[in-house]
Image (cartoon, rainbow, N blue to C red):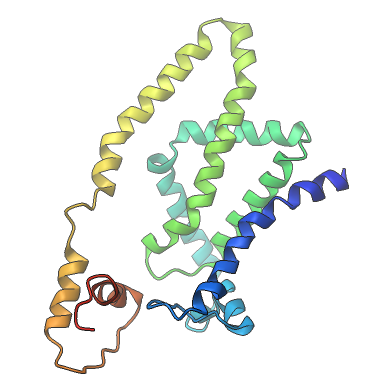
Length: 231
């Protein structure tokens, strides 16, 4: 019913309330204050990412195709094709069951994926990875729903079939773990730190540095704000 849908929609408010932290923190003039969202106008610009839109080129359908291909290339390492197949089953089951909680979630997933693929215009592939995180999480959620839907049907076919499938899925996740750990292990990566220190050491007293973007500035902000170097 519409009343039930509205009740579930209210649960989005706690998540959206995190945005209130932006103006509250900005009012205390923190060291890193991106966009300074202390006023309503700048707060709204931060939410709508207006500071990025000014430098973007017109979006073309070819960009959507490129991002779609990139998303598909990430599925084997992020969620696996088996989980995607289970997620498809879970999505169909959720829609057919007319669940008041899962149907809106499925629509939000479709809307978010549509906006990410059509609205974003990232300069580098790794920038878009952060935007795909909610989609990967929802794919795994619907994969569990799909597995739950298939469980009694496999039980009716053979009592040990669900156990064998769960064991195979667990073995598949374990097989992916070593490669993913090596790929995500940055504990010995000091490239940004050394790069930022080299920049600092090359600057004279009272210098003003014009960075080309956040990638050049984040390391310097860390050195100034955390390690208190060259304040």
